[in-house]
Image (cartoon, rainbow over all chains, first blue to last red; front, side):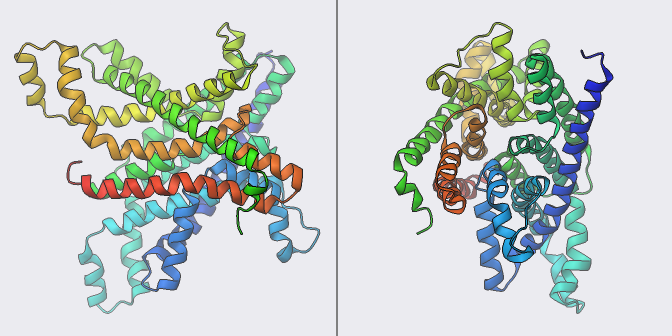
Length: 236
Length: 222
């Protein structure tokens, strides 16, 4: 049966969905994560405390819980905004669950990058007369984000692995397509091995690339921080 | 009160909470055992052992846990590894093994880092005192790694607590599963999931605070 090109087309459709989900989620969560990272570093308490609460609460929750929650309750959540008969598409329920979790993780990664820069950078910028916002935008963030590119790539591999969870809410990503195939042909061993191999090839090459990539000197404390984030927040 | 629904269905929620705790502890124990063995393989002087260890780590880290769990439950019985999936006990044990295999790969990386961090002079001194390689590992190299690896291992423990939710996909009635059951009975999705979320937070937040406190004290050592 594996000689049949239709089967491979089926896998490919799932793979496309997986990659699409992962890219959309990482893009969305990067923006949200950046906002929360800046919020957590803000000097205003009414911005800082909610940001800390969001980051710490969300990264302490299982990502599958968030995904299932948005699947079951997501429509009700958005009805006050989009009208009473709004139905959240399953795809976006998955994206919301994945990116909510990932945004908290990325916020921590970005914050680690910002904090790792020497204080002199901020002080020099401020002494030159730049405002706090200008300092962030044109001095701190360009450097910090550059340093954090490998960590963000590592987060992309995590999100790709996490997309395997949205099959449980009925998005036809790679694993779900595989499940359809093996319930049809009753060959879970072969199919799951193929699925695992596809995930492995993608994630392994991405993580190799992120390990090879060095875009500047990251201080030891920041490296330890990033490693801890990677260990604590790697979901499945 | 947020999470009050847990007290309307205490049988479901707190039994499931206990299952989550048990699964976390068993999973962490097996992850520690598997991880330590693989880490020792990865620093062994015998090259094929190192390759096997590296292959293990990279394979389990770069494939999703759900795929591994499905493989354990649907795949292995078909090729002759039958751990029966008929009773809850058996599914539970299988899930604990799955947790151990996946997180063991992460533990292995951490412990390997610790083993490599031990001063070479220590190893050479132990060997020249006449200790065999296994004795040296057991009495000199491993004990010295433990101190530096406790914070990262605790981080893996937090990840493991969260990842036990994936066991619901293969039918272990842990916390998330209980929330789904309550939701389907009452249609009070908001409350049902917030109760589960609070119970998860009750496990992960104290662990997180403990890790942060540990880290601040051990940053110097690492």
